Image 1 (cartoon, rainbow, N blue to C red):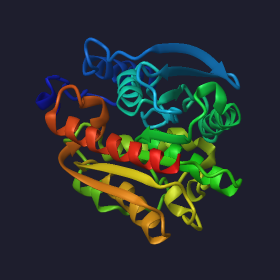
Image 2 (cartoon, one colour):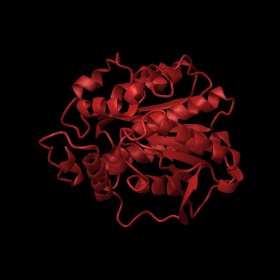
Image 3 (cartoon, one colour):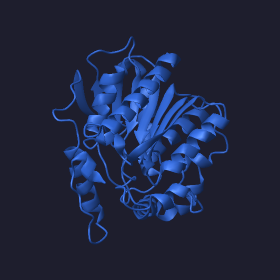
Image 4 (tube, one colour):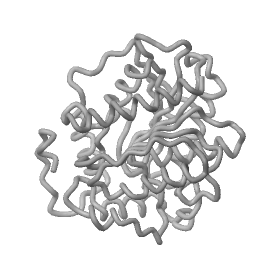
Length: 302
């Protein structure tokens, strides 16, 4: 399936170690990233609340520019500031936004809720110091595991009376519960880069001894008691993705609660398409649409 993106990645003979998973994810992500990198005005590395972050500032900022806190995907196990550098650069350029990418702690070394706590801490700091980031509205964004973290942060902020302006969730992981039965987990179990077996392994490593936490919103936003009064959202999933149906179910849950949602099920696309936009016209079109709609939601809240 990856050959359509110009990448030849044969399946391994045996399940890889965590170190191999991280190395493979990094190699693939950098291989499909825009080359040369998308230009922005400034990129700086720093720490917020002890968490590594990378801040992107646009050459043509809005007035004032919105700020987006971004959480990378990778099943809560892999991924880093570099694997999603191209995504964040494009988000910064296309929306004229300040983007703060979060290098949250990863499992299994740091199981749930460590990574989630990092995401909340960084977003809280940015919210309290928004003037340092341009002074505009604040949104969250993420893909895959990062999409689930973004949804969880939006829920936490709502519950604290600090609503966000908008959320961008690309093929988000929204349901880690043992009883989930989304059809896409069976339909797209193999053959499309991410497998259902890998999803199950990631969840086990992420939750560790906290498996009971799978039924609570920080781990499974789809299971929140209420989705009312959440930030408006753009949610996009690929047709051939094991996580497709839980992402679309989350969009439906928000819409049923009266939240404005742009929901997309993109034909032919697989998991991780944000990273493949430089290699696939279909992925590029999907990213263009989602970023445009997200920017409109942010401007509407300004």
